[in-house]
Image (cartoon, rainbow, N blue to C red; front, side, top):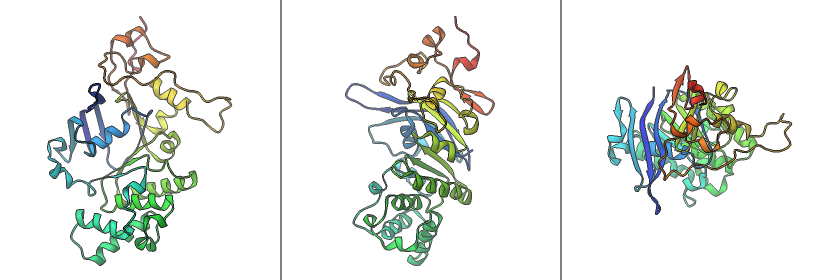
Length: 320
């Protein structure tokens, strides 16, 4: 086990009230395992993992436990937690240009990251470590002395990934990290990432709207909706035979090359208002399989072998 999240909650402040963005999440992240996190916008995917990394704004309330190496990281101060960044936990964001300074050379920026967070080394040794990271993501040495504007979008994203794995983190979170790339470059980078995981033995979490990215580059999938995890399991099992109605509808809404349907399917309705407390199934208003029982009861995420599902249909509850 790498990280255990226990009763993890995230609240945002708003002018109209507190938004319960992540609700009582319990999740085990395994070592050396790749995860895909899917769900509609507003389902809590990014919030969950940015909260875990302590990267949300100060007006956000977070509670619960994050167990790592036997300690609860939630009990640490910001200064105490900072020592885990880059070395243990790292992140790649969607827009590499937001990460890179436009007025400094690539090498200088990565040297700053290494010297501030890595072991003490001389300039030559630090440069060697940076070039090693470049080679892992198929970047040439000349990138070291280039400015961000001299790089293509794919090269900038590779720089962002190289910086994130510079200190061999145990957890790498990628938040829509390949969305802005063309499909060829995206495929190349995903292949490089998979090879990278095997070489440095890390756990990767890929947050994305693209089901195909998860199916081709992750071992396990986490399906989120309304701030909750509704299903979690192996990609080859969940995507072949989804157990939760939301997972099923989500997969059906994604186009397939061999699909003979003329029009794309969609999930009717909209996400729940997370400012309101509710005791029903969070997906009740949109679920085509709902039962009267679902309206007054909230299903819990229950293990079914290597799969976890939060649905009364899986618990054997029958319509009244």
